[in-house]
Structure formats: C-alpha cells, structure tokens
Length: 281
Image (tube, rainbow, N blue to C red; front, side):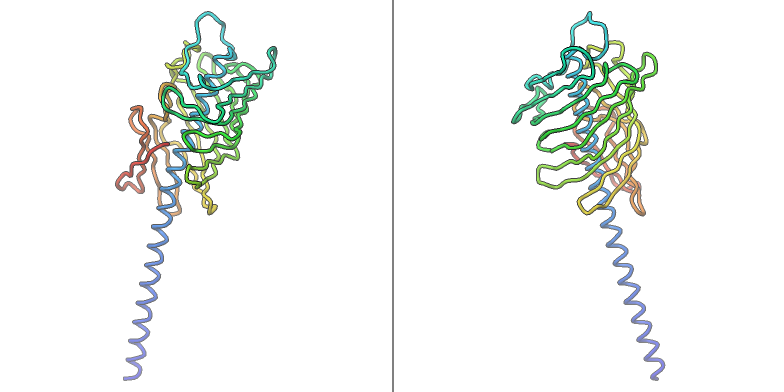
C-alpha cells in the first residue's frame, strides 16, 4: 500500500502545481491585457494632444501670414489663440521663432483650457516644400494634461496636395492626477480637404497614418500601428475617425475613434471582445 500512497501524493502534488501554474498564467494574462487597455487609452490622449498642438501651430502661422500663400482673402481661424499672446521674431526673414503664451490659463471658445507656452521654430513658410518646424513646450497644459517633448514637422507635399512627416520625440504626458507616460511617434499627415482655401482653417481636414509607442511608469511599452487612416478636422477638437492596432504579448487591442462624428469618445476592443468606451481628454 505504501507505493500507492506515494503515487497518490505525487498525483495530488502535480495537480496543485498545475492549478497554481494555470492561475498564475491567467493572472498574468489579465494584467497584461489591463496594461494594454490603459496604454491604448494613453495613446489616444497622446494623439489628441498632438493634434491639438497642430491646430494651435497652424492657427498661429496663418494669423502671422507665414503659410506662404499669396494674400488676397482674409484669414478665417478657429479662435484657439484669441486669448494667448503671440510673438514672432524676427520681423523679416527666416527662420521665424513663434512663442504662443497662454499665461496662467485661458479657455477657448470651444471650452479647451490651455496654459503655458508653445515654442515653434519655422525654417520657411509653413506650406513650402522642404520647410521644417520644431515645436517644444514650456509648462504647457491642455485641460489639466501636461504635455512635454519635441514635435518636428517636415513638409513633403506633392504638388497641390499638402503633406508633412511628423515626428514626436521624448514625449511625456502627465494626467491631472499625476500619472504619466512617455510616447514617441512617426506619422505622415496629408491634407484631404481645405487645401484650395489655405486661409480658411475651419474647412481643413487631415488624414494621418504611421506608428507610435507608449511607455508607462513601470517601463512597459506597447507599440501601435494605424490600421485605417485617422481623420482630424480642424473644426473638431478630437480625432473623429480611424483605427489603431496595439500589440500586447499575446493579444491585440484595437482603438477605434468612431465614424466621423465630432465627440470625445473612442472604444478599445481586445481580441475581438466587447468594446470598452473611453474619453479622449
């Protein structure tokens, strides 16, 4: 009987080990998916804050007549920098240095509160092929989110169709509660509407493709690729359309910005499961 007892004990031990191993694997999988969902949401916020900086940059350049377009029609802008102090130096020639100072905080007509400074160095006219722009931030916040890092624009237009390569380096976003994440990106931005009316910003629409990465405070990174081009309308504060695929260790999350409606909602779906709704900012 002793050998049978020994075999029984070994079998029980094996079952316990197997159960414990399966539980650990399940717990790890849940944690990995939760991290991916959180970083997908962080990616959405990062993208929207970058697009917001783009809106400010375009508006400042247009109002300062730095687009490279012949004057003749009035500038029609969105009013995002109406409460900011904008300084352009030197008065003649390039490169131009633009400082957009929102002070201790001011709210746009669309309810977006910004504070701090955006600094831009523009090598030549905004819409001129080959020109570049370097954007940095100084104590800059949007609706309580602090934005840091460098955005470099390079104009790679093709004839009448205007386009840019946009690189984000050393990006960092700090949420109102103090949680932060890092982000980088390399995107291609093409203007799909409004390029025949360069001084009328509200009718501008941009299509965005490329890839990104986000890293949380625990140094866990997720990379993402745009599946269907993102759509950003100048007359809407958020990305309105498009999908991004974010790869986890053993799963894939899809971030969906919607069907084109102007709202602050998106959804995240993991491995084709039930979509989870998130707020963009």
